[in-house]
Amino acid sequence: MIPASRGVSLALVLGLWPTAAWATPLSADEVVRSALSRHPDAVASASAVPAAEARRREVGTFLENPEASVGVAVDGGLVQGTLNQPISITGEGWHARRAATAGIDAAEADARRTDLRVAAEARATYAWAVTTRERWQLADEAMQQSTHLRQAVEAREAVGEARPLDVRLARLAEAEATELAIRARREQAEALTALALYAPTAVSAELADDPLAALPTSAARSERSDISAAEARLREAEAGLHRERAATMPHLGVGLFFERDEAQGGPLDIGPQLTVGVPLWNRNQGGIGTARAELDLARAELESVRARVGAELVALPEVGAYAAEALGRLGDFEQDAREALASIDLGWTTGEIGVSEAVLLRREVLDGWVAALDARQSTVEARLDVLLATEDPHLIPADSALEDR
Image (cartoon, rainbow, N blue to C red; front, side, top):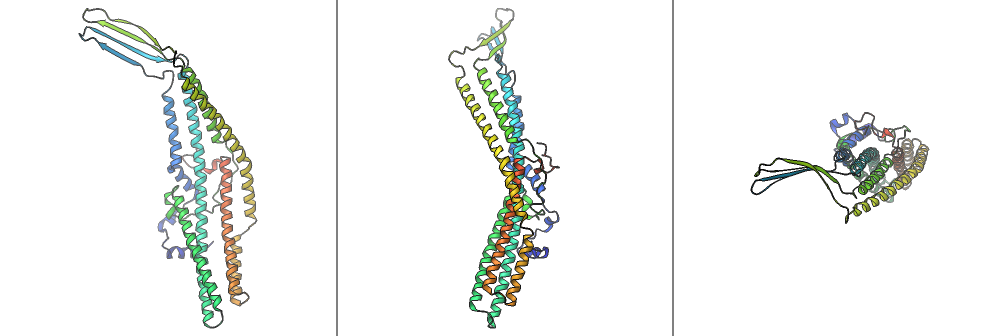
């Protein structure tokens, strides 16, 4: 990691100093809170729950509204009318409500899973932004050191202590370091742009947390929401098939009729009225066939989700443990890299190694340093995969208003 004073000078030179925003560093938890309140996937899944609840309120014993009709004869003498309420005598409304209730369960499980997924993605993107920042700072420092090396070699050549080949090698090393610094800066801008989708203030804020330290360290496990959602959809499809079968029998119309002949001054006649369709030609064959297909699909999707979840719960913890153990063997790779660079500079200054060897060794050290940063990022992502696979509730900050979804 570049010392604080060095990072400050680099930021000032490049016009990246975020002024007052750095007074309150942006943490990974804050990014997650912001993501859960604004990310389109989280908003859509949360909105799906009240929409499903509204659909359930539409169905019940009475699936259709009552109908009323009034007729008046041309001469104004006869007035008649009917009031009719369609009712399913085969329980279509009851099955429809069961399906709608299962739809709510599926929407709630989807919302929970989406929140956890968005939280994991936000944390991974936060870690990526931190990693690209460190890679850029490292590349920028390497570029400036390459410039100093080239200047020193040119000064030695001027007094006959270095060969023209040494100067050319130093210049080419500076060009390579410059390209790497520009590329690293672009990658950091890309990472900050991606992070801004979760937290708009990320572009101008300091990222305070170490990627590994910012991860939840618990080993909590929750029931997989995607399995719960698939099971709810299976119940919804089963209830839907029962509804379509119940719809084979047309609704029974129960109501009243009234009639009065005003011209004759007759009494108001009122009586009950029943109407029913005869399922002779149309017995809802299409609706039943579609419902059966949806039920088959729901069963297949449930089995698919269970298979995927089972594989994740076996494979991903192994990968996470492997990555953590492998990264732990690296020790303090930043200190090792800095001491190696210092040794190279000392060797070149004292004449123990030549310019070509110094350039080659510096490149190998910097490549190893960058690889160690990438290994840390991969370890972060592997750990997040495990947390998402086990649906660890700590992915979402404990004080988040959305934690109970």
